[in-house]
Image 1 (tube, rainbow, N blue to C red):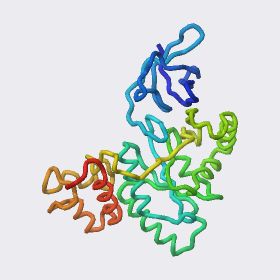
Image 2 (image 1 turned 45 degrees about the vertical axis):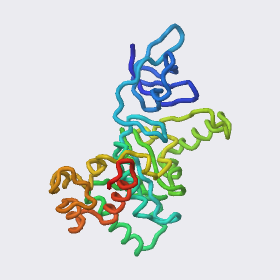
Image 3 (image 1 turned 120 degrees about the horizontal axis):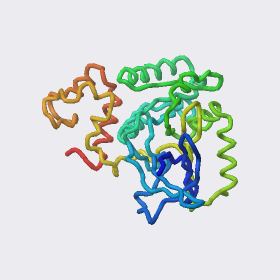
Image 4 (image 1 turned 90 degrees about the vertical axis):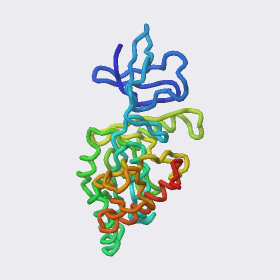
Length: 287
């Protein structure tokens, strides 16, 4: 029995890779749909005559729904400074959503070259406040050397999320010119509009692996379990356990360390407001 990582799925063909080989396998038996392997899964497999079959999915550290990827190290939140305009609330909510999924959020600012000095100062102040809370941020635009971005991606499994038009495809194409060619070839091979064919792949980009169908499809928290959300946010980490009440939810309770941190400017007010909106919208709604 061998172990490997699923790097590509096309229909019922699973490409599994390890240091010794790359093979195409199929799941053994009738695996339940909710337990079906996804890209990024570490699996055990065996060879049976001229074919391979996946026997077991090893424990996951996380699992995203869209894209269907497991064992993700980080999500690059690709955030445009212009066309579409920068939105701190969208950025906050994506940070919260990524964190709720047990994935490390990394802010990636695009189109920095398209805005004037006044907008740069305003945006930088907001990003600096998030960086002070422990969130990493990188800037990228045509002509930039992208060394910081390459360092972030190196030896990591990443997905990208962000609003349409933020520049996710352009970013990947600059880092790895062959990326667009690969995806275009596969698109032509599968045929447009064939929604019944499942396809996802991890591509090598800047020394790491990036999902080619990245992003989160919705910012609707109503179907998500937001219990314990406060403990998953870096911005709140220094203050967890310091509230008057052990079960403080940081909404209406008195003597709340997080609310005090917001009042002192240690946690951005916008981030706190977006946290409250997400928490109240979730399945674990605060009464």
